[in-house]
Picture 1 (cartoon, rainbow, N blue to C red):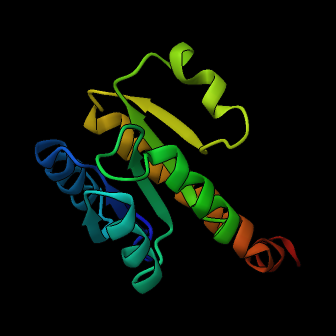
Picture 2 (cartoon, one colour):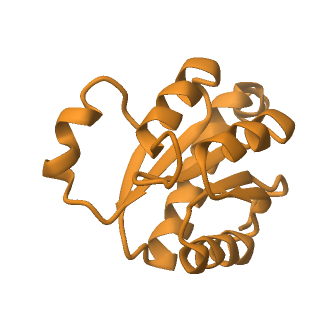
Length: 142
């Protein structure tokens, strides 16, 4: 990642192998992985202790709450957090449940590392551009 500020990423995935792969992909892209959780309860603690810029979460989590329930709670409490829902389910099968709350992006499993890296890089750059409009004014003024 070219940006001088590292995007902070949290990963919520109950499949340990996929969680490791997502973690390594994010680190290779220059991200700061603030932590991983395998269920919604642990994810809430993680997000409270280390709020990330990006949340990568699995649709079908083990435990009392699934990824969509966690996503809904995150969107209510942190609407600016960029959320990436990963799923092996057919999007058409879960579309009715997605009606009320929308992740920023959905990626189908298996998640290809270059797709995730590109998504984080372009989304983080766009967020940074929105946060610092004064820099453009400085460059364009004469």
